[in-house]
Image (cartoon, rainbow, N blue to C red):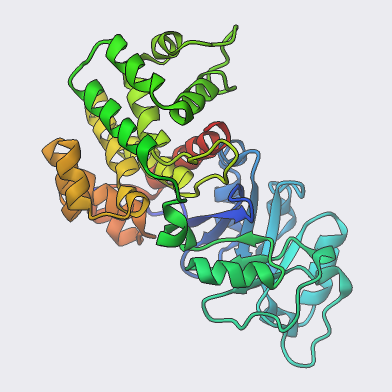
Length: 389
């Protein structure tokens, strides 16, 4: 069990925000519990890894009231990287409209969340909106693009995504990437079947020639692999042009990891990215970080990574997880985690799928600080994957 920290790192819920082209553009940050104090925000944004980890994405800080944005806090929040999503109801309180206008004047982007209170005039500078699309009615007309990007949150289906896009929203957050209409992203699935075959060959330690023969049969997979190894993520000194070079550069362990992620890659080079890809990468990296924190060995961490990445295959392939597990002949601890959320891997996966409370973290033996670092590691990795695959 983790020891209770008298001054724990605040729990921060993080949700990705994507544009209409299925690219992550920002992370939606909310300090859990009561309204954050200036000390809470200084702890979070004073953490040296935050802005580095999420670069080049923006951070959108969710606030019920701007009172916690004191000068020491603002000194940690560069206006070109952090925006504020503020409850529109706060405009009814004295000085809030003026304060938000001042923040906008010095360069901060402000999103008003919800409808302004009756009788309150919203200044022209504060016309960028955020809406909880699970409960709020969409605007009767199309939002003015001039004041955007407008943010739609809790968008939980492909249908709702389409409605929000038609209403003029530009950025989207919610569970809509898991909708079967979007998750599979079309295609005949042949590339994914070949990747599963490759993963099986790696599992039985097949030689490089067998791997190369499989790669040659799939132009789309070949494209993604060569694009990957020639990307900035590997910083190679000369262009990699053959599969044998790619396999040698990556090594079997890294090849296995990237093949797991390439299951989620777009089926056509000119197609839209699949938003399940960075989500799966985030889960894999977070489970790996939690395993390392718990003292796991390298092989244990590999299984943790695999568990996180494979946890969305049922959404991607639109088939029961039990059938997927049976086809892949996964280790028992991975299978049990994916099917029943049992064992340490299952416990970590359950936490990564939700917004855990301090008590849930305590029961899992994870300190709030360790949880924060696992989140930062995971989102940093997912952002890089989304940009390179």
